[in-house]
Length: 465
Image (cartoon, rainbow, N blue to C red; front, side, top):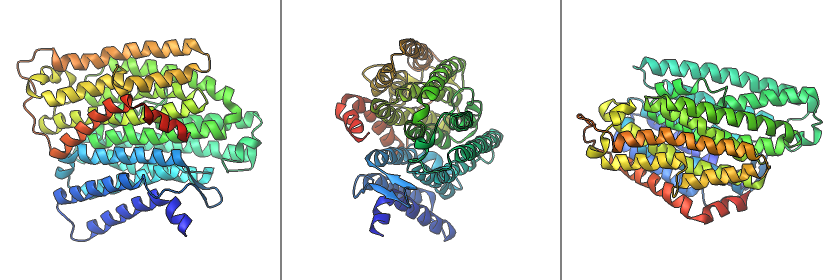
């Protein structure tokens, strides 16, 4: 029992918070403002508690596993959810169903925790569904917005399709190896056509979840239709969790098929970077802009994954930590503007610096980091990803990735130019920012700067791999 309580501490604490919110909801309830403050305190304590009393090992005959790296990955996701609760405080306070949103979001996070700790295919698939279904409901949370319903429908259909592909791949893999245990499967793989087909289905399902080209077609519509809080959750938490388990599955379960999946990663990484960048160039809606930006960022994550090394794992985890701060800062600024003015068009951001210097600088810092401009942490994150990818000796692949970084500079700087340099007779009015939102934006900005400067953070991640 002691092992159960300590090993599954992150999941048990999260489950306790979910049940507490359920009890509050079915009772007389609490007004949104004090309830949001309570949730923020609970999520902060959950994040801080994640660093203490951790025990490493496995449960249920290897079905559930935890390690130092897995604990860190869960804490990164905990941090992201806490920041979401702070950044979108204004929207949460106005929402009629705020407790339900947090119950859904924390349920999805619970599924992601089990997903990261999965030790066999059964738990892996069940955790993936628990992590996916609540997010589809969150996408439809703007009940008066037709685009929200359309985005939710597209996400449900694409999720169902990818889940079916995943389940078929699992059945083929079990039929070929006779095992569902992650530790046993690599010993039983021999590269037969059936095993290759199973892997292709497996890979395609992951590609849907990560928005890898050509499985990305749902992303922009869902981001645009969803509430900004859900779009940021999809962009940061969901992608981060899937990236964590994807790299673990590739490196451990499908290690004997390394040559096959390396070639697939190279081709799809190039396609994802190029398509993501080209479509981001054309976007005027800030949500769709950030959606295609996130697709391009996934392409760079695949570059790091391709190395099949400790350096690859550490560079991916490090980059996702940076991505949490950078992307949430961009979404937070966009939400401050949209919630007060209903503006989502990038052209309407022209001249914003004159009336909203604080939001302008936070947005600039976030976009500089996403573009990989020094001395922001995004530069170091992409540098480590490219360095890890270069360890395979495919220098043409790295050159193409570096060229895509240059292309991405154009559309990120286009937004910054509009904010700081372009003239506008009617700029966005002065926006009053919630205290919790301002604190979260400052924290994200500090993370963008300090995570890159503190080299021990990367060293610590690498020591856990």
